[in-house]
Image (cartoon, rainbow, N blue to C red; front, side):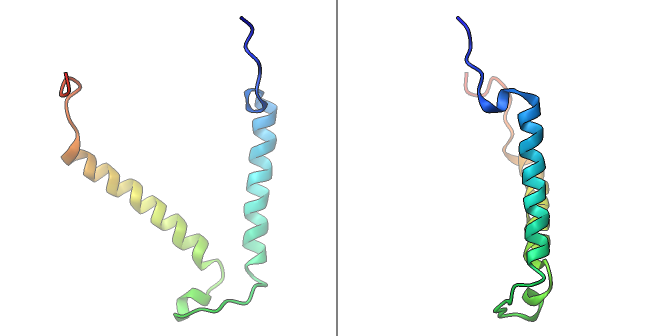
Length: 80
């Protein structure tokens, strides 16, 4: 049976998609210079604050998950 190829099965399509994705991220960072913000706290008005905040939060979640893994990890035969 011949497998039908999807759009992301071709590496050149994945490369194009990632290029568009990264370009859109750069555009959003540039647009942030021109958007007026209604910041409640002074640090929210900083340029690209939410991008940096989101990145740091994501990295922190990864490290917290690594620590939690030490406590909740079970042996492979635990449920057998």
